Length: 154
Image (tube, rainbow, N blue to C red; front, side, top):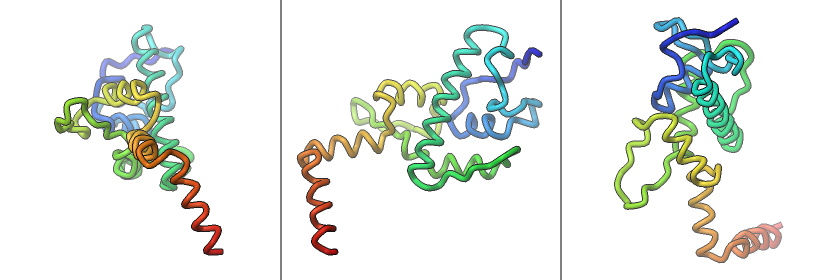
């Protein structure tokens, strides 16, 4: 079976892509992207985009699990659940710009978010901020002091 729809795999913002991934789109009669397999797509470009989407969605799910906001759902998602997932994890993908200008992270396409994610070594923006603060403080020494403080409190 071939998946042939001219409205799929477009460059939409991350929130829209997550909604299309988990819920699909009734207006364009598109099934949820999570149900697609690479062999159902017509050309190599679409297969590559699906692979990138899957990697970004896995990063979103990993971030949601790390924040303890991931709710495993079997079957169909509703749009509200997909939007809540985005609202909970969007700060994980707000990478700083090189020249300190404001980036409208809600408006950029999912592919730009993917490229930022991969360009930063597949780390979320909050992991990068923690790493740079940890390096300034002294790396794992700051973590050791926290562990010592909790050990003395016990």
